[in-house]
Image (cartoon, helix red, strand yellow):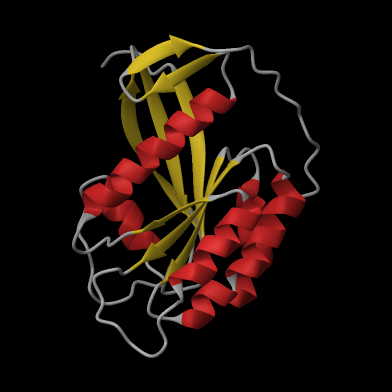
Length: 199
């Protein structure tokens, strides 16, 4: 196998049952489970992308969403470069809890990351408890985070495509060149400021 130029840590955060594990599984071609699979231990998978003439290896971390394990989950924040907050589009309470997760991310990692919001289970029929998309757009805008509705069950490629988009954003933020998926163009020099973690 050819050399991997860069390894980047990606972490998915959100409440138990929002589908973080399924999103990660389908990203690497594993099985989708209709029944909720509760995660009891954090783990990661690897996904490779080629951008321009470089190969990047994403270490994508699954985390425990249950409230009693939240302090344990924070241990895995360290060195994360891309953070994805996940909610279930059919469960409003899972979106409300993103306030907690976003505050923890800011406290532990500061602003020197790529932050994204993902509404999973887009395939589900509309229900009275559906999350208002306009609220999510406003929430994402305030956090300067990208937002995407996805379905791990019906359209895994949608989430994979979003991952690649976030990877390109990360490269652009941390490079003196700007990339656009398959080509690189010159851009002004980027100066990266390091921030101390509180976690």
